[in-house]
Amino acid sequence: MNLRHEFKNAWEQIKENKELDAVMNYSNEYMKFLDVGKTERTSAREIIRQAKEHGFISINDAMSSGCLTAGTKVYAENKDKGVALFVIGQEELQKGMRIVGGHIDSPRLDLKPNPLYEDGNLALFKTHYYGGIKKYQWTALPLAIHGVVILQDGTKVDICIGEDDNDPVFCITDLLIHLAGDQMQKKLADGVTGEGLNLLVGHMPLEGEEKDAVEANVLKLLNEKYNMTQKDFLTAEIEIVPAGKARHLGFDKGMVIAYGHDDRVCSYAAVKSIFDIENPKYTAVALCVDKEEVGSQGNTGMQSKFFENAVAELINLQGDYCDLKVRRAMANSKVLSADVSAGFDPTYPDVLDKRNACFMGHGLALTKYTGARGKGGCNDANAEFASEVRRIFDKANVVWQISELGKVDQGGGGTIAYILAEYGAEVIDCGVGVLNMHAPYEIVSKADIYEMYKGYKAFYEIEA
Image 1: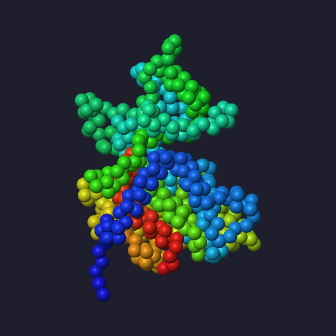
Image 2: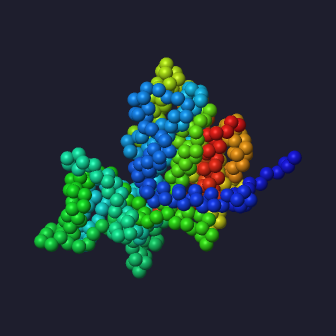
Image 3: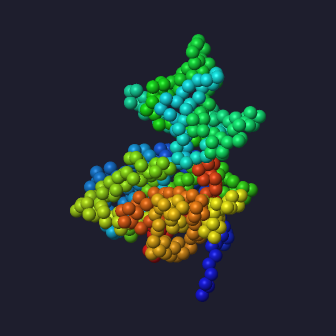
């Protein structure tokens, strides 16, 4: 018996098992998903598009048919910003589900309701940042505009500018080093303020316009392309994200650098793995929600009743509905809270306990608890469930590791885990390490994201 344990290097096993082509193919598909899903809305739409290709029907169509049988594939959409995919199991839903739940929102900048102004012969948009960001990282970058505008007549218009090679891009300016003496003396957090994140969007004046002619020209161009007026900004949802596509990173192309790994990398793995599930014992669920980066509130966040209501509808289709069955279904479920962890960065080793850190290339990471300092605000998975998940991964030959989100007094973070745990479900955080987390461009290992896909699939299929 070997009394010692060392975590594996996932690349070594991948090469031994001749899985390198599978890893690269999976990564390429994931990168295409990132390029399409730059926001929570576009991510949700792409997930539903792919789900339909894999035989999923809407929950409304399932309700119209009036019955639900094992193997049926159903999706429920939440206001164009969230999705739940179900593969109905052999057991009744009240016996519990196997849920992999992640989020598809990412840190970004949102436009303020009245954003457009002109100053110094330049047109700019005022923004309000969303989620936890280092504000200085968003300056001097090419940025794209995505969003939804509802016109005065009720017409819904999708906006996307800056992603096509022929599109213009936008930028938040920074202070030149020659004049930045005072700025350089400030704390890093204060060098760029939230009110200073103003997006540069135009410079040419509208011919014949005397007052704010550059602003007027921007409005003219938007009206010509989208039929919108300045008043339409007041009720629009418009997001600013990094422009450009996901890219391979490194001479060996072993990593992916892109916007939005947190947490589309885990949500995509949940979706991709459930596509491979045909007739599970317990109902398999890939849950992709919104608003995690700002506390999971609102009608599209995990704290809403969307998921519970969808489960209730499905139980009703199984016959003999009662509220107690819904409660049992939630309480008897087992959940992987699919979210990322802090990858060990040798440039910044002091913030992590190296014996309990998540290493890039060591596979899928189990995080028993997150929280801050004294585990504040976390879901702390019990030993019984953590051990069950460990056995599942070992049976499926998944390379996995254990991780914490930083040293004890350094900080911490949270996920949707505690929300599902409040129903009585067994929940543990389970994702991959990320470098540059919450920066405009984040980094993941291709080996890790492939092992994550394998691990989620095993969780759906294998009994411990």
